[in-house]
Image 1 (cartoon, helix red, strand yellow):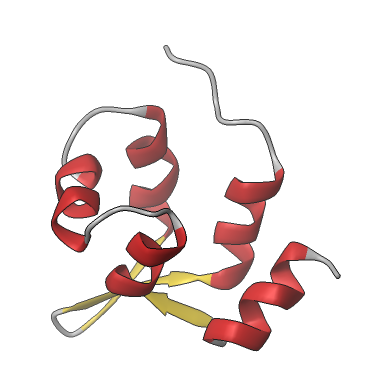
Image 2 (cartoon, one colour):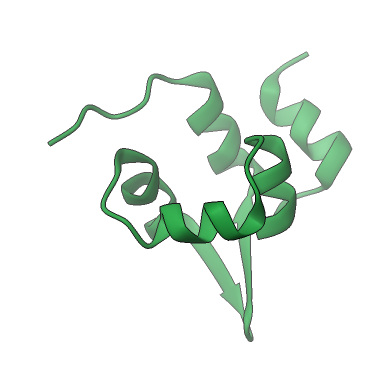
Length: 75
């Protein structure tokens, strides 16, 4: 089964920050700290986050892209 299909079946089209933290085996606060730093992970996720009101979501297809492909190189 394709990664995007797995994520869609488990989480739906949008993942919350807590769900993404669980998927990446991090604490939600640890993921928040990672997003506020200058790392390849944060440079990938920051422009792809979706804010609805005060809540932050991530699209399943973007997370599947992250999990399927190689991590962008350090610049």
